[in-house]
Image: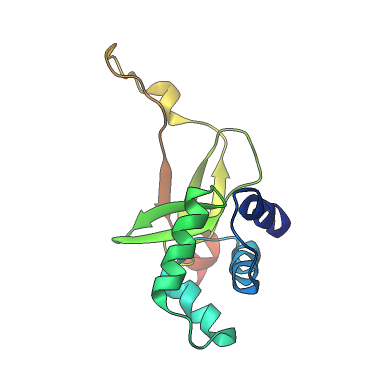
Length: 139
């Protein structure tokens, strides 16, 4: 996803354009990694010193609900990244140090027998956590 697509989704869903929202989406487009609400707040307060953590959380939640952002959780904290542009089913490798991601094209669900005819699987999420090469080199 890119900034213009994200802003179009907001408009199409009836949400108004604001410079703050564009700046928030632009941050994710530049970073290409998972960010915490605190990361986002620290960045946004450089341009908008009065911005509150509540405003950040409201927008992150809205963007996740509209599938502009993908959401995950590690170390008890939600993290967000711009949704992938690819429409094919995939999963991610996630660096626990820097938050950068890499796509995994295969899906482990193909090898997991659910074996319950009374349960319909409607979705799943598979993420692999570790440390990328750059972070290993600096450790």
